[in-house]
Length: 522
Image (cartoon, rainbow, N blue to C red):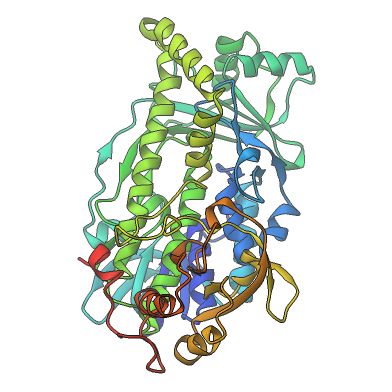
């Protein structure tokens, strides 16, 4: 094989995935049709869960140094904002950071980990067998190169050639409405003018380099096909029509039209070909969830695919990628359709009055703490929880592990997420089991870090918990609240075998997997 994994697409999703694979020692090559890194940035936001993922790998400071944090975000551009700051996270904010910056930071990390990034290569064909995949690439000079790999992952956008070559369906709906965005060097200096535009539904966001982004939907132009170019004159005319002023926009650096085509891949996996990011799901960019969902796809897939390639994956683990992430993709496509409808109907004269009343009702509902928290958890992805494999699993299983402070035996205070930069499992022992570290080390030393905790921050969800196995992506694989040492030992061995693979030292009651397999294996 020329490489272990070929990742098609050097956007945020592809770069994040390659970093995760390389972290686990998997040979990875990214191929990208663009000859230069992306300069224009459609996506501008990193939501709380995405920032937690960066924190898990020790990368959060790099992103925070370049971005700007705000404590909340919007749902359907309603007046009442989602309160991210009230969520249970050290990263309860939206980070404004241009996509180009996000890609540059992830590319920097990929280079540090030895990932090969080949630009100017376009996928010309793909085939697979039981042993691997062959990808035909058309290089910068027009010649064809055939690359053999164990797996291929399509991170190549909504028009994914990898998805099409693998024969994976992409059902959904075509666009029915479009909006426009523009990044301008010159805008009206009067804050009152911009506030009035915001009040009429125009999204206005300051960008780095003195640019200002405007995003709007013009009732008279919202049926214009997304493929039709946007002109400065059209943008000015639309702003005048919407808010009575063109807001002084001039010096456009980028103008683009986007639509609400919504599609979800029929499967995220076909044999040795997998999909992530926009190749697996597209939707209207409501609340800026697309890039974030792609990053979270990559984090879920990376450690699982690495375990498969390294020969340590229990049965059904790689299939759990589709089982866990496709429902998330469906939830995102559905909530973006709801948000689009709430915005679109106010632009249609026939529905304007009831649609305005509906938006007012949603605003009032968002003023309720429980409703706000629910939708904030949805958009931020902090509410993402994967289904446990057994009905008697602890309530923690499948959820994000809280980033609590710990005092570990023989070491200084540390947070949970600080234990995960190497992408290994972490087993937290709150019961002080004297034989735990030796038992885990004997069977899973290269895959699991065992930590005996002498003190930790109080957290309601952890009341009575005696052991927790945290996955490399920060979700809980297994937890127990039993005080019985033998029961913990047996449960631990089962959980480690089910998630981290068979013991290398004969530890545990069995080496075949039953926990993951029945839930996810096809």
